[in-house]
Length: 142
Image 1 (tube, helix red, strand yellow):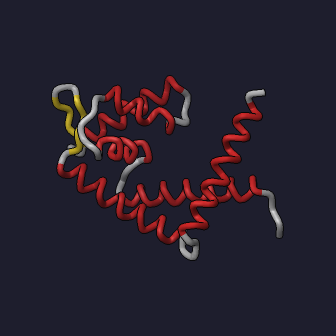
Image 2 (cartoon, helix red, strand yellow):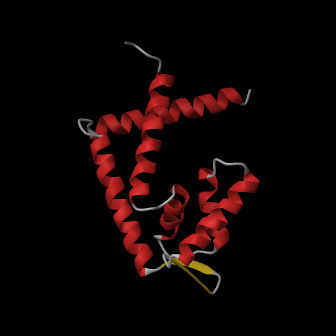
């Protein structure tokens, strides 16, 4: 059955979200906690820097988003996955190991997701979706 692109975009988005959440749940991580670990994987940063890095991913309202992020960072510190030293957050050895494990699981899922899709096909799909998104943004600004 022929369906419009919006149908396929929504269906894929829903499937990707469910797969990500299920993968992270295997490691007892929330999505926001995963994002914090990823933000810290390149090295120590301030809590304000983490907030800036994660701002585009905050889909909840602004007031709750900041509180939820602070709770998740505090939970990671309590679990000794993240340390706070001299005003900077950093992954502990356990946090780094968990980040690596989660990255491996997510990479395996990406590999399965793109089975049968060539690199050029993938790049073209991303390029088309990016241009359509930019066009939609532009049209929405009129």
